[in-house]
Image (tube, rainbow, N blue to C red; front, top):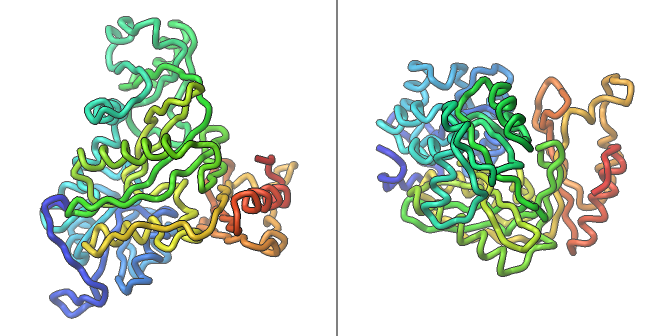
Length: 399
């Protein structure tokens, strides 16, 4: 069965038919899975992680890791046999594997919803079907479609239809010649060309939806990206009107309903210079921009993920502390000469309101997400001032 057809009500402390504590499964062993593990274990659930990496951040925190590929039949069978409900921690887990798992266990989100999020063309079509504005675009799968692209879409951004994230698989193009060269550089795989729009800022909305259709949402997050990777999130969003925030929440809620979605969904938006809103992309899972919720909300996005997939009550999250969240990339582990170092965590932790989260990754690399820190304060101005101070201590450019 699929999560959208289930009526699962899995209480903490439940035992399975072999007298073992109820276990939840997660496909993927990254930092999102790690934080899911912590949230599930807090409620007394055991967690099994399926991931091929023996040292995955989620796997070392879980009760057990099944070391296998995401399409391995034996691994999937073991996960389904041992777990009473299953989720995913990143969108590039094969939708076909989730479909296999759903034949015997509730899977949230379901394979069909994840498949839409895995394909930019299907994602854009979903936005359009829901009446959610998005950038003008064209699908390019063939040379004929490349030739037929309207000049009105240039300048634009050519993006691979699948497997792109954190700015990967994207090329900016200004002319038709640029477009031809870019498509060749991407090995002529299916792509979406999006018209480049005059962006004012970026925001995101995280919603959680239950099997019964109840939807709750987190505050709108204002995001700053650098080199395609999230650098800073501020909550409450300081430069976004309440009217625009409500529009973003309504759009995300509409998309989730159209997918019969169960679980946590993040939708990213662009705010244009004229104040209008367009959807950028969505992620069928908790999101980097929502990590602050662990420290600044009474219910985190990972708590909501656990509740949605188990049928526990979804309550409206409340922001109890204004905050700013900074991503910590692997670059921080190297000095200006490329020599490895340990960042000055002691000086950082001396700042009031700083919450440091390191993901347990064994190798630091430039651009790799190694952790994050959330700064909470009594007001947004103080949170941002402390975030700037933290960035200076770490040698990061100011915000």
